[in-house]
Image (tube, rainbow, N blue to C red; front, side, top):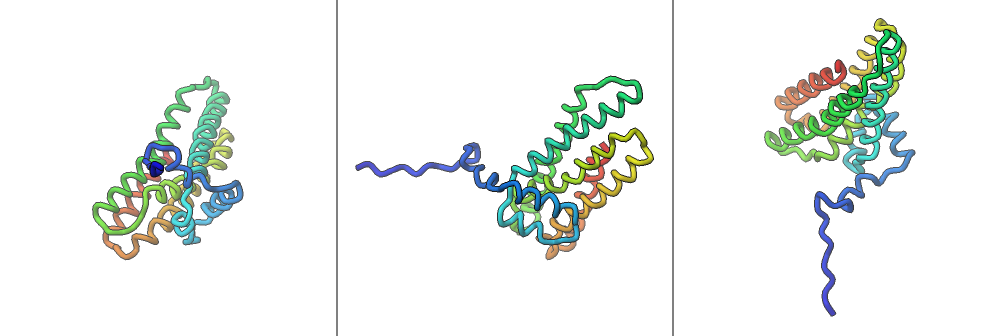
Length: 195
């Protein structure tokens, strides 16, 4: 008999990603609700036990389409037309933010520290941090700028606190470097919010 060959689990094989989609609806809803309460410091533990990419992907996709719909609706009331390019710009901004910023943070953490923080955990945390922007995009359907800006400010604060609290947990032993990481996270998140 010939010995059976072990199947390799490579980065580009679908079987390697299966574990990151091992969640059901109740897990995703629970994680979405947890993201609205940033002072619960246990989300990083949930992300370490079972990081998922399902929730972050669909949250980001929903944010993109909700922003495009909101933008179209408001421009319609101002006498403008729907601009299909807003979906493309929104997708580039949100997906870029969703994956490139965690990649930069993960690279910096691994270059400057010896902290065990995985890229998938950061993507999971960043994805759920965007959840609050779905109801915000719905509120932005209202064509009153005086209402939109305070709602965006509250979303920015809650979402940034969620990121900072959960990324602070593994970084707290490296206080000097942690402050720079957290400041960069807050500034980058402000940039996304203002887009």
